[in-house]
Amino acid sequence: MGAAMPRVWSVLAVPLLLAVPAFSQTPEEPFAPPKTHGLEVEALVRHEWTQKIFVSPTETRNEDRWRFRLLPRIMAGGDKFKVVIGGDFNYDPDGRNTEVKPADPSLPVTKPALLRDNYDSRSARLDLAHAHLEPLSWMHLEAGRFPMPKGLTEMLWDKDLRPQGGALRVSTRAIGDIEGLSLMGLVTQGGHVFDDGEARLILGTATAKLKAGEGTGLELSGSYLHFTKLGELEPMIRRQNRRVAGTTPPEILNEFRVADVVARMQTGGNMPMQFVADYAWNTAADDLNRGVWLAVVLGSLSTSRARLEYVYSRVDRDATVAAYATDDFFWSTGWEGHKIELASRSGPRVSGHLIAQLQRFKDGPEAEQHHWIRRFRTEVRLIP
Image (cartoon, rainbow, N blue to C red):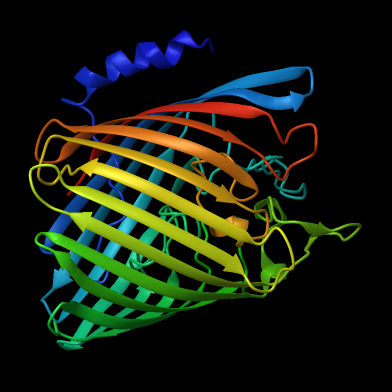
């Protein structure tokens, strides 16, 4: 696939906005119950190109792929109690992340030699199945399979994945310039698309929302993530983290007890802006244990027709458990990269996105560490 292809599809993406549905970002307040009853549908159409993938010091290769995703969900209940059931339907014409089952059942199921995406490319599965309970105005509970509550960036948790377990948040009302304080605890097991066995995450988060001026707000979140039983992870999703040499299946070298701090500042007005700074530190590792995620967002698709976002991130190989981190940067940990995204809204529910990324596997083999690859994506999203 030549370098001209991303430019061609960038042009073609504009008229597609008028006709093709797509997938929305993670909701800003997943604990808030859905605002409507009945059926909602999200969808995604994506075409991506990854160029100059490292093969050897003298050889690179290119990849391109389509992804189609449909996320229907049904909701029932009221403001204090609501049940949500949703499906996740994926289709990639190449089927690169799909298990291959032989005709002879005595033969083993084969899987991709290298997995770089947290989704099965030809699948129909349960995406959401949870109950939202608000017994008191200051208490919110989730039980089942639900979106990750706000607090983490994708450096630590991919938006395609759902915690499976329970979460409790308690919060205060506004006090002067403090708009609210909250504490949240979460336990999840079995939250991956692929088999993660009894691997478990115990998460605690404290958040403060502050007024920082007229139309300006500051949110500070501190989280502690304790991952356990990582030996249960399917070998193909033990990617990127360092492993103990000679073990079969390969045993992950470090434990993961991650401290994470996120600051978000948002301004209003005719040109809304948001600044995000996230710093993570795996306290259980002695080296290659830090991560930083910085983002600037101009505009908002909820109040205007365009939005521009820039992200810079540098994530050490053992800063977090790679199996659950974002896959949009080709690797999950051990990388450094840049992303710029231009989004445009063509209607109340449809948006188009042009995304360009540049990244390198900084903690990979020495010959690869300074090799930069390029990714281009066009997306059309349908939101509820």
